[in-house]
Length: 486
Ligand SMILES: Cc1cc2nc3c(=O)[nH]c(=O)nc-3n(C[C@H](O)[C@H](O)[C@H](O)COP(=O)(O)OP(=O)(O)OC[C@H]3O[C@@H](n4cnc5c(N)ncnc54)[C@H](O)[C@@H]3O)c2cc1C
Image (cartoon, rainbow, N blue to C red; front, side, top):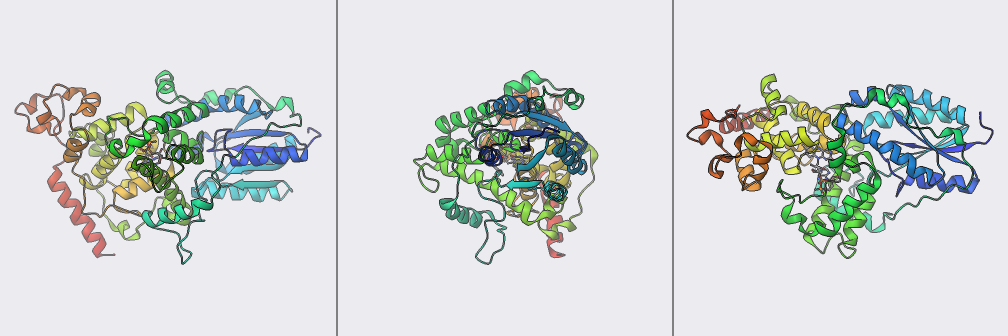
């Protein structure tokens, strides 16, 4: 055992050095006590599978780790990665490592899904029973989950009043950058390691070159993306955000999901570009800030209503809905061959890039849960398995919204018509033509409804797998019955 005690930071969904509250406080404490600071990440491959973490996100995390290690070295903080199967093994692993390295205090930022909360509770109990202190911080959101309450002290269930309350609290909140100091005391040099061999065992086999181009790893890449957006696109966000071919959104979600970007940095960039304002100034900035608060909202929902982490509907009466079991239709939806061009283009965007435009997430989710009447949980799981930005709160919130089972859920009778959505948001068809090249020579008149083309049967493209009008009526009827029996 090294004779000198030390402090440690456990990185989880906060893979960055800048503006990281746990790291900042740990560094401050280490210097105050003249103790070394070490840092680590625990890879849990079985847990990732159980939580349906996509191969792309696993790859993204793994690509971040060596970058994080290099960044931390500049602060004289050695970093290593430990591997265990799943969360159940984490407390024991930590206890053993704390004893190996004489770790006296452990610092980490909170994660809010129910399994992560329980893991942390077990870790705290195990370590504290041997007098190792644990310190957890709220860092993943702008305002700490649980801290935004109605006048009656209840959690908000609807976004708009939640947002209004957030704006009040943000006036007083600390969203300044949490600085990290260089550590004065010398760290145990043998703690640092080159990325362990064992990581290669479960690294997914992916076309890393394409992924590195689409999703470059590291906090500098994340900050650069944020700054470029704030400088050039933020003020046009309101006009362009709904058009999948317009590149009108920030594409920072993958970085926020694994924490290589802090939400406070996103908020500061937006307010800086908007003369320090969040409720006035440019419409683009206000709308984008509102989206950041949607992200917060769904994290607050996770902690206030743990049932949503357990696959339960937020609106209990919607548990009565009898979903259809249709494996072929589900597969066609997954693979982007439903015969509805905008749905297929979106699903292929997801398959090819690991990301899907927000408007199309709503369109495809509604198509699955309403037109196909397939359980939203199947779609939620499929998205999670494909998305590079997969994150329980936002994914669950988005799916439950689309399926009319959630917080601000779309009323069940308001069902998007995917053809109209395509005509409206991909008017010239450029997005469809890119992802569904079978239709690239089709005149605009037929592009969104290729089945109306006189030679439709000669196209190398399927007929719609469902009648949009009849399936819409079927969904309304099923949802109406469920709400009547509630
Ligand atoms: C069915 C469905 C599933 C979704 N699954 C996820 C998911 O797994 N992970 C995820 O991060 N987002 C998810 N979203 C929300 C949203 O689609 C993405 O956050 C957004 O498309 C990311 O692109 P962007 O970074 O360019 O967003 P921008 O439009 O630039 O917005 C900035 C940031 O605000 C947050 N944000 C924006 N819209 C939402 C929203 N509706 N809900 C919560 N946060 C939001 C994101 O962190 C985003 O990066 C889902 C939405 C739906 C309808």
